Image (tube, rainbow, N blue to C red):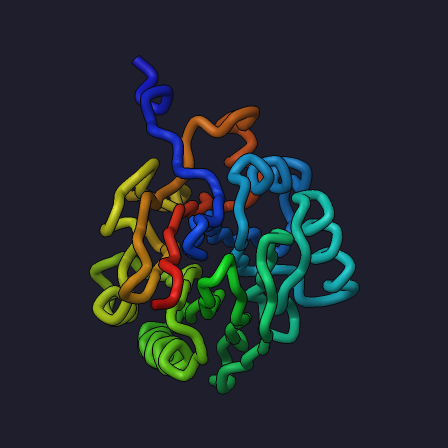
Length: 255
């Protein structure tokens, strides 16, 4: 029996009369678009996201052109990030009213890759939310320090809610992941939906990509999407070396 055929659908995007909003958030490490770009675009479109928090966006020659092309192929627009954030990128649908953006470069550790955050404050209906895409270090100590900087960035944001997503580069039992999950909701744990593991090319497969949300955000479902309309398992394998994480979140209207 195909269990994915019985997977309940995530709620669709909508804005309620009271100003609250349901948004679909996608986190995706796209490996600098070095794989099958058409498969990547098909997967993103099938997820029907309002926000896409990208990791490993193109960072070098004509990187803006590559980001714009991906946005056009997925019926989205570039919000912030890219090379100016050392890889994290934000895309959004036209539902999002953008209040501000900022790309943040983190301190460079000699011998390691430069890291950064792509950040924005957007509004859906009457609900304002800070959004941060991050790709944490492969180095354990630096990764933990970057998780602390990420939480400091969230605390600094001028918005009642926050959505943070990215490639954490460690499993949920790691110190950086535990730090984030202790301060924010791990959306997969709050409302499991779909698949769990996001990096299946390792043995054993691991969940190293995640979406987090601040208190007050209602998590309606989160996980690796399965049984997407028009998407074959081969598309997910061809698009990039990570699997996407999709969440449906309800942002309450301000009181």
